[in-house]
Image (spheres, rainbow, N blue to C red):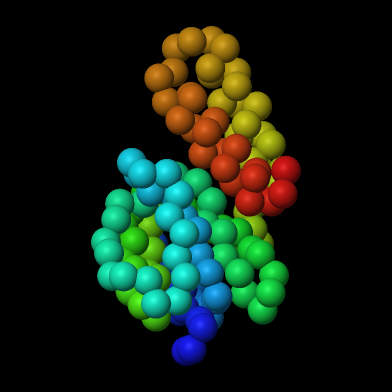
Length: 130
């Protein structure tokens, strides 16, 4: 795979993505974004919540990722994520409804999870380009 990486994204429920790419960027839990090119030094890092960006056939694409670990090697990046979705897996109407619900719970001030829920929803909306 000269000049390419195999990008695998897997959750406990399913394989989300397995593609040959030329670069990958993903959020880490404590060190910001990691950028990976072919030939990268092997490393294992905790993954944060956010968007994974990758280049495939000259086009930049994105998927969501929420927690887990990344195993990086010279020819492969494997993200073992708690949750992950491609944009095609996301339902805009359901996300908008969930966003309004989370905003309502946040304003009411009686739900400690409302901000975290809202943050995850907004990451998913970003994956849809919104």
